[in-house]
Length: 429
Image (cartoon, rainbow, N blue to C red; front, top):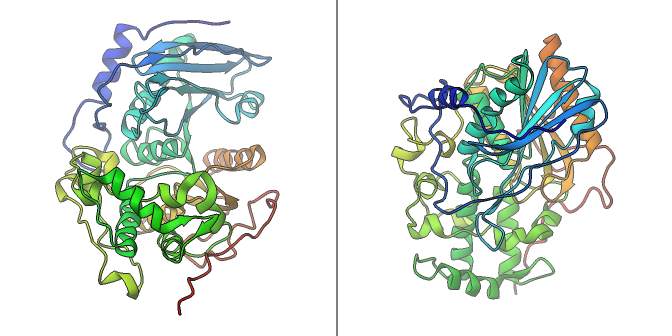
């Protein structure tokens, strides 16, 4: 069965009330998203076929496009899936698309309904992604003959992982639990700016707002690529590994995956480009080691955007005040969304006294979000058992030495394991 529909006026009114602006106090219900990019958006086709034993619902709503699948023998629980970053630039940047939950068949087989959204815009929009993903609960209830879910799980990958962690902070009792896979967070942009500052010092080229593209091109000429690092490139590669979580399996391979070695160099915040995200960036606490610490350019975060009074919760660091179980998955060789974000999250949760609600797992992978189906299913099933039975599952230590991390939950070990732990240091005369 397929249904195309817009959200009814009453549902839209309820959603607007839920997400209305509030006094900004982190950890209390409500969120104000960073505004969507101002451009026209084109809507793709959300249609999809239900698997055997389920019904598919799809269409367009205030949050973009949606897909919902409900098994004939529903267990009373709903899984919300938040997708990752989609660039709003380039030829296809205006197209909104919605996909399926990555473990869709497993969910339906287990009696879970699931729902996913395109969001109403592309770009790095975790706040808007959270708003639009949560609005799916009303859509689901409407199609489910008015029966709301008894439990709702929030899950997501990459930026969708940021959506998940953000949701468990800003709506701390709205979800039964969360599964955040390769999750980003606001400090990711500290890292990119920090790499940019190191690249400035190593190459002697400083970013300016008027010439950032040319500045990066001139830096790149001095640095080389992972296939042929120069001495300066090798030095920057070592910095990227060090400040992204330290030596660990597949870190060097991660730099070579998806153009991350040069792609991690960001100059916008350093050059004073005035966006909320850039204003929140803070590189003052990054430890580059003695050789660079005293010389590298630093960028302090604007307290009006980074602190508790921020107008946009998604650009401020997490305070760790979660109230429901959160299980995270992260790859060692992810240099797009590095594992240091898990370390940052862990410190915040421990500081808030909520460590009993956080489990973190490490996977020996090169590149971003490379978990297989079995790994995702195991993590989801363990989260569900934790929620239902109240027994916390095992995880990995994220705050220790990661040089041989990730053996427990990586299944199977990937070809070439354990991979490089770091990049060989440059040799000098």
